[in-house]
Image (tube, rainbow, N blue to C red; front, side, top):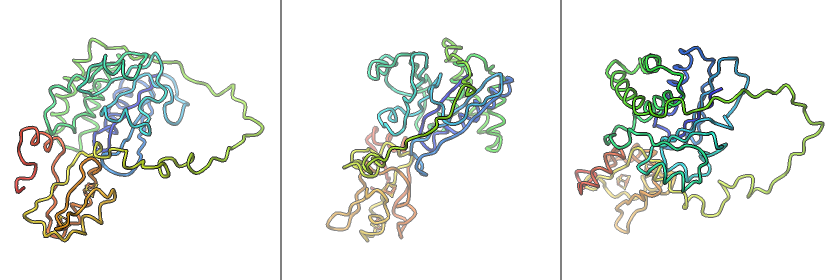
Length: 315
Ligand code: SF4
Ligand code: SF4
């Protein structure tokens, strides 16, 4: 059975990736499960999706504990323990990661026992093309599995993306073909494991449920300085940008509406956004009375910063 987990952030197309891969397996004659697991309900928050595919009926349920392939669409997730990216990693597991760093660097840093492959489209992807990461991941995973033809991959993309129109489908087909072709040297590297059986399982007579202190049971909530240490700015796919010409320095609407307290007002009322902790939920954009806060794709904001240009034309 093929067991594949996709990890990314809300908005990166991990759900689409798992659906495309699941559909492609199905077209190849496999029994398939594909499911998505969401964490916090917000764009940019870590999510994952998983696909099981086998030639026989699949009786396993739930999250994949021992994946054969882990696909990581955002390498900043690796450092976030709660994202569970490396969960169940074993020596046979292949890690495919979208990163500017080398496979050797990741293998050494994380002491990874199995093969590590960098998603090759990374170097050529233009700013603003983050939306295609899911399709790249699905196409690369299809090739790595070694049992999905490009024709069925393309058919799966057509079926899944049809509601988005012909132009989007055509764009994604081109990107998928590129990712699939670049993975050819590794085609078939992902191993299919045997199925697990619960037939020999005997329920215990008694199960002790340990009572834990609240600091153990809810560490994410009660852990000291947890939220400040978590760089939620990495979750952002859209960046709020304040047009100071238009801002009337009310100094409270955006400040009090930010769920992460990432906006502070200076003494004169000018708001400032802490980009290390702004997760890009866009609540402030919706709340500002004079519409002084706009939204810029993070990739575009980074490109403008790199070029030394103002992110907001009016600033
Ligand atoms: S809510 Fe709008 S007008 Fe008020 S301080 Fe924030 S950006 Fe300025
Ligand atoms: S409300 Fe605005 S500043 Fe606060 S996290 Fe959301 S987008 Fe960022």
